[in-house]
Amino acid sequence: MRVFRYPAPPSSAITPPALWLSRRAMLAAAAGAGLTGSILPPRPAGAAELAARPGALSGTGLKPTPLRDVTHYNNFYEFGLEKTDPAERSGAFHPRPWTVRVDGMVAKPRTYDIDALLTRPLEERTYRMRCVEAWSMVIPWIGFALRDLLAEVEPLGSAKYVAFESVVRPSEMPEQGGVLPVLDWPYVEGLRLDEAMHPLTILAVGLYGQTLPNQNGAPIRLVVPWKYGFKGIKSIVRIRLTDRQPRTSWNLRAPDEYGFYANVNPAVDHPRWSQASERPIGAGGGFFGAARQPTLPFNGYGEQVAGLYAGMDLRRDF
Amino acid sequence: MAPWHARSAGPIRLALYGFGLLPAAVSFVLGATDRLGADPVNTFERTLGLWALRFLILSLCVTPLRDLTGINLLRYRRALGLLAFWYALFHLSAYVALDQGFDLLTLLADVTKRPFIILGMVAFTILAALAATSNGWSIRRLGRRWKVLHRLAYAAAICAAIHFILSFKVIRAETLLYGGVVSGLLAYRVWRAMPRRAKPPPA
Image (tube, rainbow over all chains, first blue to last red; front, side):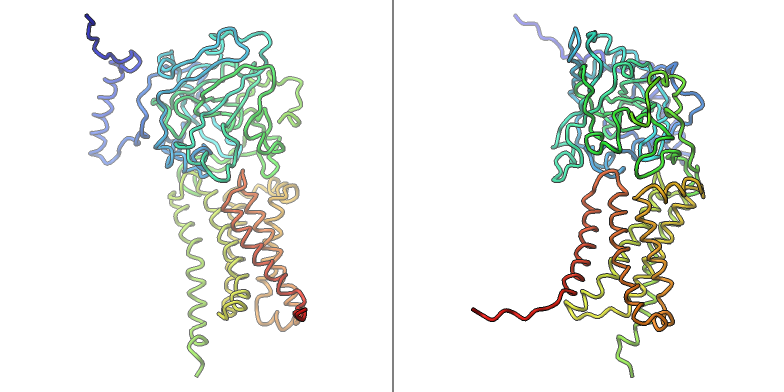
């Protein structure tokens, strides 16, 4: 006789008590705040709370850009070309079920389920984000070091690069179904293996204490804080180790404007605009909010990463 | 007594300036009071530049509209052209003051090195010259040369349209549409200037 088994949720789906208790505290605070007229920022659809410990490599003295701006002003061309499109047009996107295949030149290729990845020890990393369009934010990401994942699949000695690939879902991502695609899908990105193994390089699964909203690259994306934002490939389905420099979407689109490395560099201008300074987003105050601020070499992470590029001509390898 | 359309030309022109400057005024108030989105300076710059191109295109529509439909809006063309100039001036000022904060070194590098910026500056310089000569005194003074000078509006439109196309990371359908309209308006001029030959006799 077969024994009936009650359908049990995976342990990853069970909210830890500390979290739901803090949620109650937040709701109580929100109710209190409601009386005084202020409310919590609305949580984007589908995002859930996500616990993380503060990361040792998190930036200090950085003031995070308001959640509303992080989630409502960004580029995610699969959903449209306007910076308001990702928030407006990503509602039909399904970040579950989801797996990430890690293979190529590795000893132990694996397929990771996103819910299993969420049970790993997660860190909050507050990083500067510099867009190649000369605007910037500060974002409290939640994630884990890419190197930890790569260590598990055991890269072969022949592996020199890591190639990343985004999901292709024209039915859920309007721009992928467009008549005049602006990029070739899937979006692809790549890093040199030593860049991928750098402790600052993370796979983010959340931001601002919650799982990654659809518009920010749900359920898992790359964050490389010393590179221009377009290197941070979103909604990753495959990570492949290889001995050849991977093709990257923006470099394929305009090789004279976007290099493979795409390190933030105030001394190397985009052909159409200067990269010497940036407009901080979400400072408030309209026109008379924060003025432009100087862009820092390697986006301020030079001390940690400049050594990766010793001896290279960064004007040529931009 | 003058016909109604002659009598109403003044008030219509005034209304044209009023409504024409409305997008700039609304956008400025929204931006100054932090209601223009996450990147207000960029939004403001783009709004102003786009309206400059729109008014320039409208001014170039006057002649074909008269030729093809008989509707004569010639008396409003100067207002349309001047609106294009004012928007170009606001656009440039927003870039110099609000965006670059009068950073002269950056501005100098921009206008000497970057074709994208140079095209915008050429368009602006032309519009400034045309605006400065958009008055009865200049028309009388320049005589036949006035018409030649004001044909530079075509060059300004080409430069402005390319500047607009280049202002985005990728080539967008919207910018190509504006480029197409400008091309069409210029092609019409070329077609109209071609010598007309009599139809060949039937064989």
